[in-house]
Image 1 (tube, rainbow, N blue to C red):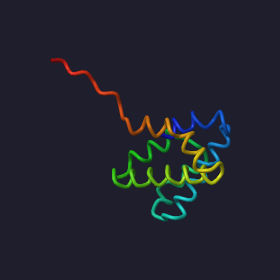
Image 2: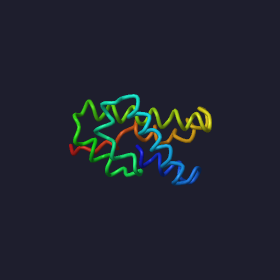
Image 3: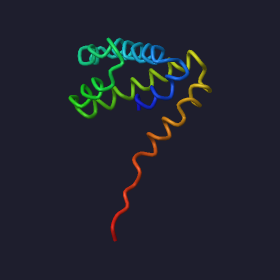
Length: 110
């Protein structure tokens, strides 16, 4: 989802703006959940989504899902604080829609 968020927001707030929101979101997640701090401290240096994906894959599924959800929620809340909830929701509507719709169903041979 962060790849889609990055692609959606970069033309509007620029790559540095998206990266700054991402880093701030990480910092806030780690400060409110100290158990995340040790595991994810290496992510704060840059918006490296490959590294995030790799670290999440090393965690227990429950922990990875909880951290991912918290990170996305924090990112959205920061964005909403800056530009308002309505605009943030409109900007990310396609991202949420693509995520919630899931992959396209496969045709099954009959």
